[in-house]
Length: 266
Image 1 (cartoon, rainbow, N blue to C red):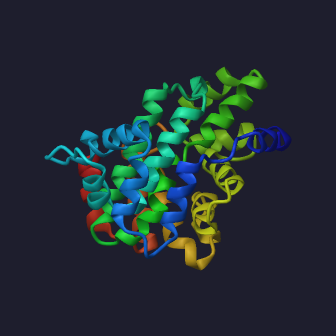
Image 2 (tube, rainbow, N blue to C red; image 1 turned 135 degrees about the vertical axis):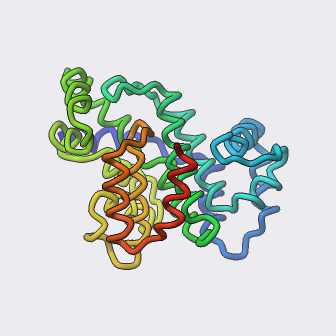
């Protein structure tokens, strides 16, 4: 099983130049928003997709964003980084997600819900977190694509689908069938792409933030809460909300803003 995932991940092509450039900018404290816009403007398809993402009704922005300058200025480089990675993944991965009873459209919507929840929760008070939280929330469920490939290969798609329909603890089903969760697999993909250690750790310890290095624990805790209140299908349940509220208090996170994010997500 582990060899199966290792082979798939090793066969994932390296990130293209446009994505690598954004990754470099994200690590450069001296880069200007205009530099970012000018670089992205060279790719009309990417520009169109970023503006489409920035104008998603999930963000509740009243005025239409028509330029990259405006998008980068409003959302910041961290979120633009997430947009770019999300566009790349959507365009270059085959999204067959039948075991999760998900269409590519539902998968994309769920990713946006994770990101907008994080935005409504922490962007205003701690925007510095979004260089990590943005790609982490947008792409944390990328591992579902790899799990799907394994389930299809083993002819276990229907068995898995039945398991997550019967038990809301989908991560338990992922462990039972694959000995790894989707978000842990995403961490492996990000490590394959040589992403920074903090981003990899945020994903790797999302399910168990207590095990995360102290410097990365806050990111993993926030992502853990988001995944608890908004599971893979992006549907908030009473049980999931109750569990998430307990975690928010346990981790000492912003409970008031969390409740606001929940209201906006329902």
